[in-house]
Length: 218
Image 1 (cartoon, rainbow, N blue to C red):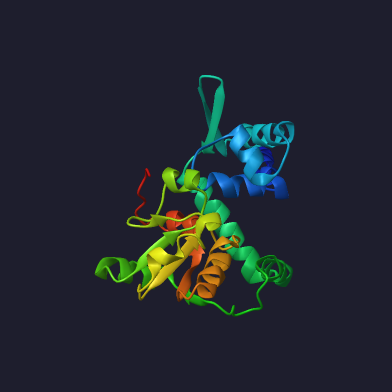
Image 2 (cartoon, rainbow, N blue to C red; image 1 turned 135 degrees about the vertical axis):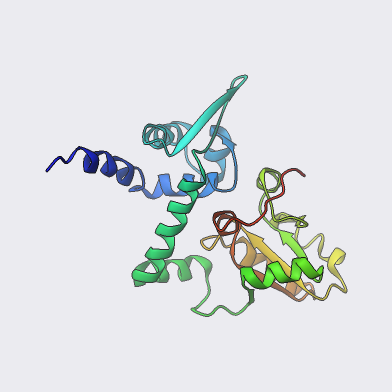
């Protein structure tokens, strides 16, 4: 049997076989970023990030462009995003260890204590204009792409801007995706300020991977 195709397939699989590279893919799922921005967001050294990006680039999972002295990276295509999303879904479904690790990371038990809105419910609320949607990711990620009509309220600003939401009946917060804790924290912070809010069940990564519309810019 000619194993060449399987050898090349294994190269792609190996690129996904590093937790650090998976974290970089997770960040790039939010939009294009510079090496410096990735290093800061992932709390890694520049040299380490550059090395991992080269592995991903050699596997054709990411692409780059130069702008002056800066190098910007992005996922090579929507199919990479869909593959990563599918891998996470299978891991959460098939591996109790992954689910336990996620619950520990989020700091919540299975079932969660904050209200949850499904993607389908949010789509309906957006169509009817009944929800105030908060994007609690960093402003850079909001500008790269967000749910149409969402407000940019980075997590660090949630308490200071809670007064803007007084009287709002349906406040929905979202962040990067199912492995992101920011929306959970935002809902708890808003609750402490007297604002009743819920969170999207997953986040921007899943919104994109399921073909929902994305708005770009601030």
